Image (cartoon, rainbow, N blue to C red; front, side, top):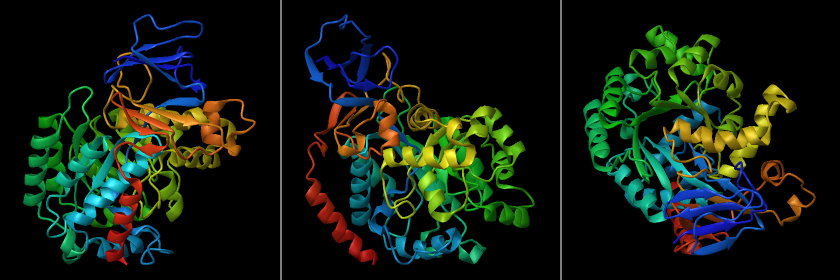
Length: 443
């Protein structure tokens, strides 16, 4: 049944002042000012109290970390000591714990207006070999559009790495399971709800064979590559001391510098690397909250975009951000980038573009990220009747500047997944209680 989302208070789409028409999973018409739909509609939704955005796109997360927010083992530590401490907590993760951690994180994202997420799952202690299958099951149940990344860590303490032996896998195991999950779950077709990417933790965390074979696999399956890159200056110091090359060079040697790749953080690039990444079309997920939390620096978004690199946003893991809220990430990005470039150089619309179109480009999708006919009906509707919005004039900008945190309605592929601020078909109180109980095992 076609539905006309009618007369929004404001909408982030040109020529859609009177709203848009959804038919099935797609947007079929934008309705300009002074007009009515040109096609018959079966129902209308009165959006006169709502600001309508394209569904937000989260380019990087670690959903298993929702069970260890504000954990004392990591609080107050710099990035590397934090990782060393927390990985010895996360290696207790069981299939049951992962299931509820993922479900809670996905629902939290959805309630913030996020309709598409990528999760970087790189934790595979004994008993958790089926982690990607669990993530797929939970994403299907919650109803988000998802890029599930089969992450990996292959260099442990005994090999000179940071990771405990308990969470590191052999190259054969990593590559065999990468092929399995691509074959079983990856759907590159337009409008697909589920895609798979391959995501070694970083170019320093796996043997070179894993990097090169991952690049070969994604070509064969029409999939994508992802990793952490240049979050801390320590990365390149280690790379130069160990390999005689910087991290970007290691990726290039493995065949990663191309439009199938997007990376997380992307802070400590030099000018030559920014130019090379831009020419190659490598996307960068800016993760402002996590980068502020560790004080590691600020992503050079303007230089990256000028060079041709797509820029998206992400919330990062809930143990480094302590939140899975994409609207908060939009505001964090605006404020942090203004700190780097100045007030006039970055607008709320820039931050929203990174959270929508930019994120879609990072994930290799041209069917989401905007409100336009032919694109997927992924929408986030926000009410602005709280005191914090009173007096606002530009309601789209006000969502960012005045600090919106939750959506009133969320649609994914033409289906309402959030109604009146509540997830459809899910007992939120019961989920939170189950999640809190599971988190006790990590204390």
